[in-house]
Length: 602
Image (cartoon, rainbow, N blue to C red; front, side, top):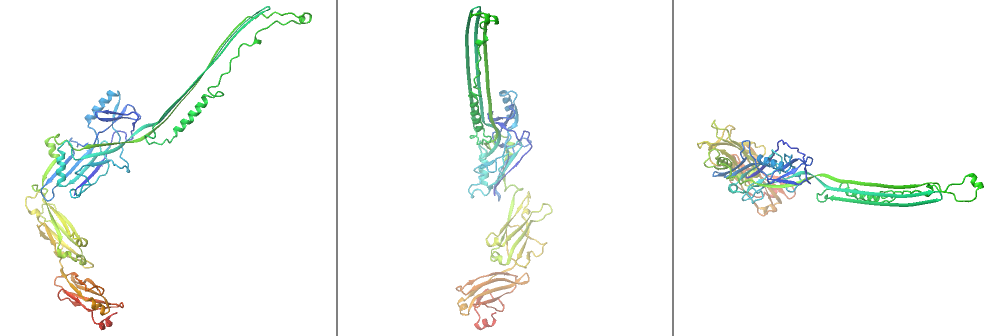
């Protein structure tokens, strides 16, 4: 039988297990390896290994074994390897040098921290892909099934082991494929890494400028009875307003919910901003109050008469006050308003990655010494260390018939014949009544040669114990617990210690009906283990048409066999006949007279 076993061991790692990369920064590719920028430190980078590969031990040897077994009683093969998901140190060093040239001052922190798939992931984290090791192959070629933990070696220092017991055909096919550039064994890995992404960003800018300019000139010349006045006034108002909204929304692409409702906030802000900008009463567009030029009453007019002149003088023109003025007013009022808003959302996402590596292509690349360690062909016939003898203990055909009526089970204790030098090889075997009735009453004891140059390794000893049903106890072969039977054959027939007797029972059921009998029960008894026991009970019904029964019983050798018949009448009564000794192997059941039945029925 072939099984594949996958296990994983995780060691300590040196990088931050919670490090996340910057998704928006993109990916660098150096020597075919993807390199990611840290989300918080733009000068820190991580690399993602390309594919799983066969790991090496401390001596630098590949941890790989493919063994093909030929000859012997159990040809087949064995496959075992350890895999890891890493990069060679030489490759990491070259990536660091190239990274420093592209990004001066950058540091390669190590392998990208990876996460296992979740339990509901349909693909799984680790898969063996092979036509030879396919668990769904037809059962005539493969006898086992693939067992995998699903855990991938995603952490630096972690490894995954694959082990398989192969049939002879599987071992041949797999070894032949390993000799080429591509073998029939690939390993697929799925994992995840965490990345920071900005799925939403909106920038709102607004500017409003108001420029008011006032220029006025007043030229006034007054002297005596002459007045000259000139005025020039210019008012200029200029307003400019700009609003700019830039929004980037990729939440749907990343399947991220807009929990902060940033898009609604953006709509509210832009609506309010437009209202404030273009409100001419209280907003940014409010018009400034105009400047007032030099008023007429601010310039001195004609001179007023005195008190004496007003009383005694007549009407006459009064001269102007001497007032020469030249007034210039130049005012520039500049008012500027601006607004800036940046709405952004940053979140962590799980980014999946898939990679597949082929386990092969190194058969010709390694030295002859390494190849001999990794690819082995073992001749079971010529190897005294692993040669085996399988001894089969089978229930004898006669003992199998009716076994469950007398026995619970038969137990066999087997051991290699002690010689005082080799370690003991023992086995405890049990044949159950259910196995005897289904025809599977055979158990195997395996003897290993273990390098013995003689044939004495084939010698073994055994004891047999028959468990009797009820309180019959156990019958041993040999009779004492310290005694053993010897053998060298590859098969031993287990024969019952009791005498087997088959009894033919005949009955005339027509006479049953005439005598008002509905059924007869035949009870057979004899000695088992020195005690008298009922061995079987056979029922014969009047409704049956001349039935023939053949019960099988086991009893002590030489013991007599007796029987008795119990009659059941139609009115529900029963009558038991006296026991009789069985003479021969035939019992012909004839109902007694009606008078006897009436007298003995109870």
